[in-house]
Length: 135
Image (cartoon, rainbow, N blue to C red; front, side, top):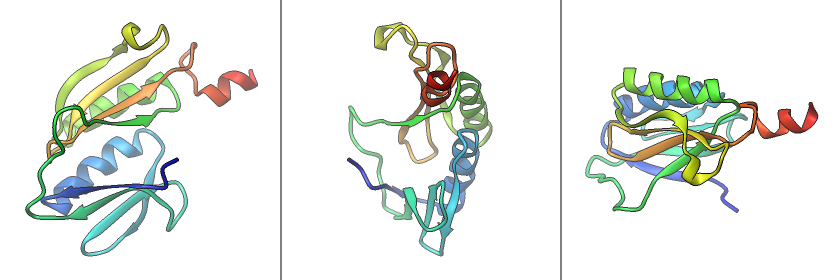
């Protein structure tokens, strides 16, 4: 359904340091950058998330959060630790969120611009769903 998502950030350097860390933990990387924007994804030039320099940016209102797919539970743990080290705020430590399902393993952060972000792995044995089906 979605092609990509853009977030406005007040300081591109601070934001990219944070997103390099959290998205790197999940297997994503910078796929382009310029003076006013940085894109993240898997393939060069094909961003799934774009950070755009907007000095007057404010985070979205209540109810918004952005959840990233994690390939395994260990990546969720790394996402959380890397995010805290890169200046994010804890918004929920890694663990099972059984209200969202018996295998819903997630961690929650607030990025330096105030965007609530999450990493989630729903595979029953902690592996990516595609890996679990192949086993």
